[in-house]
Length: 67
Length: 537
Image 1 (cartoon, rainbow over the protein chains, first blue to last red):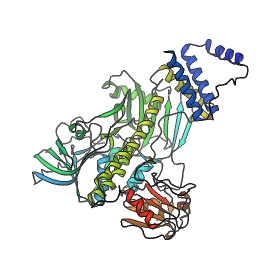
Image 2 (tube, helix red, strand yellow; image 1 turned 135 degrees about the vertical axis):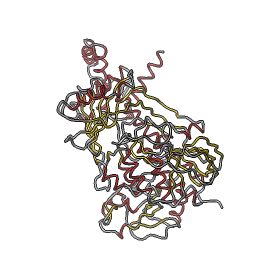
Image 3 (cartoon, one colour; image 1 turned 90 degrees about the vertical axis):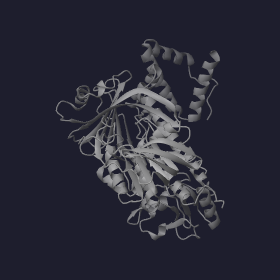
Image 4 (cartoon, rainbow over the protein chains, first blue to last red; image 1 turned 135 degrees about the horizontal axis):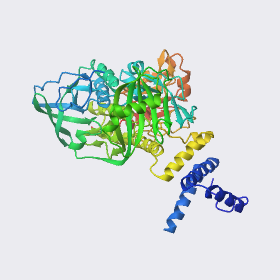
């Protein structure tokens, strides 16, 4: 399996709104913990190590590019 | 526990389990030896037994004239028990130890575990998944075994002070109470622990990470009716924000590990007036307990770059260090013994080139790296080093409480199991299709065989394990034909061994090669490969 990079989200604006609503009301430490829960839930749903590795690598590469 | 003082100087601070008469000064001021082992801990003693039962003359140097008290290493893995059984002391260890297979992980004040594991998923094996046994009992058992090996000369209170190593041996300067002397030895094996004198004298060091967290060992004696399981708590009410581990040992001794955090006063935190309230809070007001051994430690996950330096070899803590979560310290040391001794035996008997020991360097480093990897991962989970690391750790525990998927992420220590060497140069790769079985580079899986067990038939020499008769095995390889035993079904199943098939198994019970349709030439080639190549005479 390969990491999907073309649009795949159903109702992106609503999902984005819900994510921010969950996190915005929290203290930074709790927001981090909620993000971590979310990452883990979604990672387990994906399951495939290659896809998750690729997602981690792509996320990290973007950070590097901004430096 | 009786606390006496050892007679060797400067040991006043170390509690003593059992003392020995300091060994006298040898008659020869300059001796010649084949093998000298430095260190009388479990690794040095086990290696002495292994080489001793091959018939070699072995000198063991111990700085102390006593076995130290203090439980120290307490968890011995199934693989270590298999090794000990080959050394003639596995049954004694199991008889004295507390056997256990199940570990449970608790969180906060919840009564039900958030995660649970079984360390012996494949049943019908001679040895249990783990035993707990105080290190001094293990050393007692090894020393008892050595009583029957007069070719092993243990020298109590003999301290290595100087070392001059060359490409074909080493000259040792040794001091004991009656004076000093020299030994010229062909081989020197350093089993002298994390502060190895040999490593220092060679000017060598470790590479890797040091963790700045502190843990308190509180071994207490109490009558408690709890199951023989490993219990681990994250953030329990009796040690908020930190972890606690509880383990049962023989004689009603219980190991409790309290995580303490970073900034502590090491001397103060092992004083009974500071430890006892922690234990009391954990056990409740109505449990009577008394102090057995209190100690504090900071751990490291590091190893030497190489374990083989010409004729000076390193095994156990002298070569590699891990955090204790996972029981990979002493068990890793026994794995070194298992891997090293048959190779050194062949070299000493002139049946293999000294180059075979390079495979000890390779395979023991595979084991050390797997142990370091696992214990580093456990450490990062147990003691998160940053806010984001803690957020993920807590998220795992939040989720594990409700959802099964997250329980596999809970890491309170991945306990020691045998390590495989799939890329070892001693292996012969499969040339046929195998549906299952034990791959080259992996340890043989035990199973019932006849009135006993398969592993009792393996080890100590090369074995060709066959299903029915095969063509002649090479010299140095003994045939064990499974069809000569009753109750061989599980062996055939676990090895996926067809009629006429054969496994070539090393003296440490690892598989070197396997053949569904063996030929004499293929077996001979695999045997030559597993012993480091044909000897050039």
